[in-house]
Length: 137
Image (cartoon, rainbow, N blue to C red):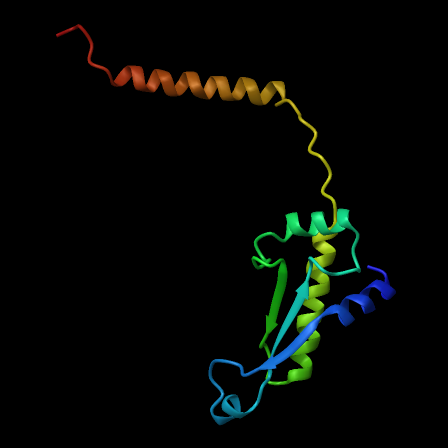
């Protein structure tokens, strides 16, 4: 992603610090070290409509009902480190979601693999046929 666009994205983020959960004693109860990033995909001017559609399709499991991308980080006890981690996670997620996957080219199985499959199938059928009761009794 271009540096200018990255700066625009960071400016478009709504960053809040909240109290982190988990172990930590009194420190957890008095310090807001968890960072929550909110990015409004619907109202952003950083992306054009095609890019927004691609992001919406690739991030559909991570978007809220209002097309908000919410990322949180509480990996460390430092608010600043958590902010850096969350922003890095956000940028990586968007970069991966903007990549267009190449179309899959249809291919045929090799002749050897077809023969091998048919031989295995015939062998299995023979094994099943040998389990049946015969007319010799």
